[in-house]
Length: 163
Image 1 (cartoon, rainbow, N blue to C red):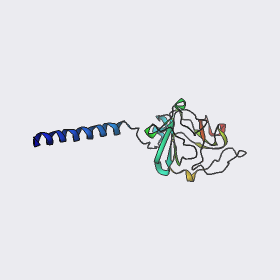
Image 2: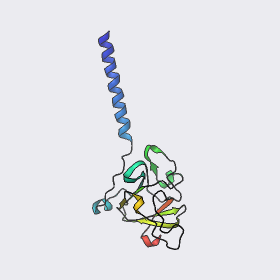
Image 3: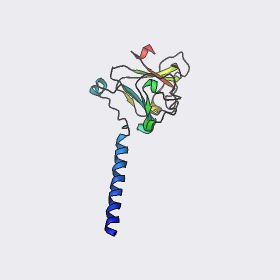
Image 4: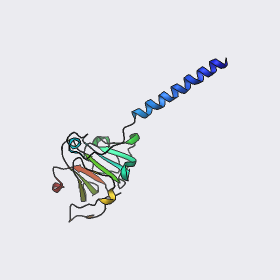
């Protein structure tokens, strides 16, 4: 009887380990920015951001523009790790434009693409947004403010000056 219990316990432990591995494998992979030209040409097409510098903490990604980062909306083909759709407004500390079309992305200080903006080129990543500023839109609110924990919306552009 002890041998049967021991064998059963081993089978249960193995099944639990297998279930845990399968669940972990289904989670979306954490983004790893690449700035080489091949990667920029063959990118995923997404804008990735993370809550902490150097890609730590919670992270989200968008395929389309988003007028307001207060909620992550599936209409923007957007998602966050663990399917969390909570706000990312004024929380991003890393950003990566993994464009597959060679287009830059404008990161705005306010919702609805208003205020000053920062322009992140195709294939470029800013691992720590404390080193980036809203340098476009000199006549707009927020010009030269720091981007860290300060982005509220974004959209893809044909050039940075088109913001």
